[in-house]
Image (cartoon, rainbow, N blue to C red; front, side, top):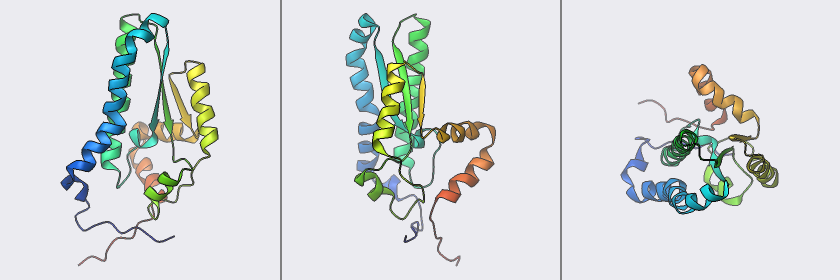
Length: 176
């Protein structure tokens, strides 16, 4: 596997507003729009929302800032909405599914050379999402070990940083 070498600035994504808006639109705003449209019906039927998110929305890594920001916003929005519905005694379940890298061609291409993480089987991830929604669970983590990583985020941030660095395949340019 060829190692990924970061750009000298490392912040090139900030100069590309199209990338930012695409990630925000696809990974956050579209969920909010769909939820706004569906919420009246879900309230009447005591339905469920199943939100499929990413581990990067809970534990950010290098070179994923726009995507992570959108997924963090998604997690925050639905966590807040869950609290608001609870306070209003509205019986709508919200299941937040936190998934790791799945074995899709587009995902593999997007992280080629950047990470050593193995992709999880898509059908097993889908089954975990379905089970979570059917049981009205508040959260689902697939693979399950990512729940532990998310707990480490708050409890031991230095250990989390070490773990994340171990999964990256990075070579840094020689210091000048």
